[in-house]
Length: 295
Image (cartoon, rainbow, N blue to C red; front, side, top):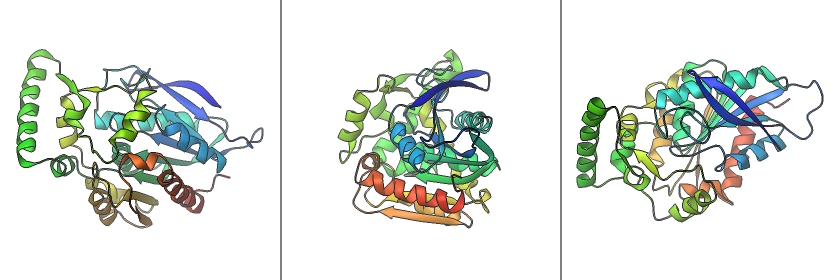
């Protein structure tokens, strides 16, 4: 069962859910994990499954919606990567002040663009004692370029430049179909569409400012600052939306202790369903239990 909560980040009220282990004893304090969704995700998409597995392993878990997403306050459907980092830090503060949580044992878990978000957060916030980044992004510009043909890339940069001027003159970004910014991969896009269909807060239009926001966000710049705290990177060898090289390069720049897991034969969205989901969570739970036991 999830307990609905609210907390504030940069003056905006955010909405979240706290998941408690079934065997939590009165007065007991456990390690806590903040879950961070991806580019256009919300707390009710995929993350409840992660929370269930982590609860079974003994962890207290918090999932939330970033500013402007779901029922959280803020400018609608903004990316604002550094503001998302501030949201995660606020979530860590919220979790640390729960009576069921040991404030000295906090971890974060991020998937897809959330993998980039947790890397940056862990690098700048020493409260994070253990990090897991799944199919994440290390360099926003390199990633957006790598999944486009040359003419698509030039077109995207031109549209982004035009929208930059529009925002300067009007204060507003042009909204476009999600697929114009986040290219669908035919391999596993059907899985994503099916999952989003039953989650009303999973929107399908985005402001073009997502492009500028992504081009300027590079967790590789700071990933080495996580050490000596542990970080696990999980990717797949057949991810056609966020190529595995993104995780490989993050891993290479990170300090010890670190680990890179490359799952075999899965696409990007397949990590959210079995059998890949179980493989992801088995690695995640083992990493947390090794470096940050729940009890």
